[in-house]
Image (cartoon, rainbow, N blue to C red; front, top):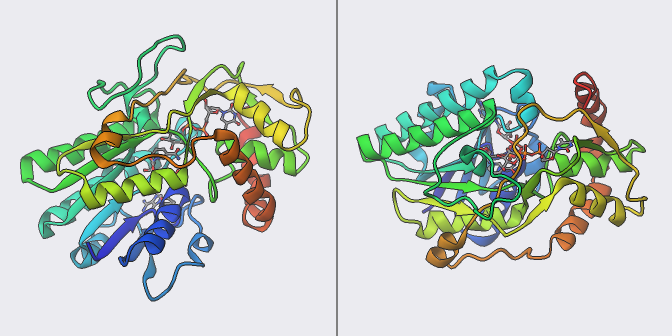
Length: 332
Ligand code: NAD
Ligand code: DAU
């Protein structure tokens, strides 16, 4: 493969992926990242500068993208506006980055015949009822609920259209909820960990019955690399680790691991249109690629994640108060 252009590589999953690639392959990497509030150049400080450089720029900027794509053997596209609550407050950046940004990259990849891997989410399938025995498969129809998931669905459709209409060599992956190091404190698990660490009470939306299907980010990174190495062109791979848990159960586990009483949290205003349950059937991906998650015990992954946030206060403390103030404005 050689040289990868990794968009969004200064964000949570992108940075974990870059470190995984540098550790497990000989590839070199250029990260293209706008360094929005969610991107942080410190996420890449331990990356070998001889093999990894960061270009600060916008995936929707055809000039920047046109300069970088020709040098790449493959584009791995993580960059996105990624937070549902933000998309409810202001959808516009989601359309620009997730839709126009993906289109801009696809056009450059088409001009240069560059392999393209698109990183997407299980949220494109909408939600499942709590008691529904089904899980999402690659055949599940698209039914996105939020502005975020609608823009991710749009980007998936663009990628498939560029494959069919222009013969672009693409693969796609739709993954479930990630957790682990470098995740912004706006997201559920790091928000609750850092609330406890700063003496705030954790905040649970509604009754906490909503179910998410958790996967450690290290397992997601390994799966994406496996798809790049041996995925079949045109294919969609669902990535999940059989990690279904309702939010109340996850919050109680965090409180327990931090030595707090299990009822030491607040119920706050629910998210409008809140998806009830996500669940991935990743069996086809596992069978075809021989990939298996290594974090099979969620409590172990959670304990590692709590240790990381405890040891890296300087990474998240500068943005904690502002993130909570922003939630406070919507009663969350
Ligand atoms: P994140 O918000 O932590 O990081 C996004 C990164 O993209 C940031 O570094 C940001 O600066 C960058 N970025 C945003 N707009 C940009 C633009 N216009 N140009 C260049 N860079 C830009 O997101 P994440 O949680 O790491 O998610 C990464 C990808 O994985 C997204 O495509 C998301 O949809 C997908 N995904 C996330 C999850 C999850 O649980 N977090 C699960 C499945 C799929
Ligand atoms: O399923 C994959 C998706 O997972 C990704 O595509 C998204 O980029 C990623 O943000 C994530 O989306 P969610 O909306 O599921 O994640 P979030 O961390 O925002 O919330 C997880 C659950 O926790 C959800 O049911 C809402 C709830 N929640 C969230 C926050 C921030 C709370 O109860 N309290 C909170 O404070």
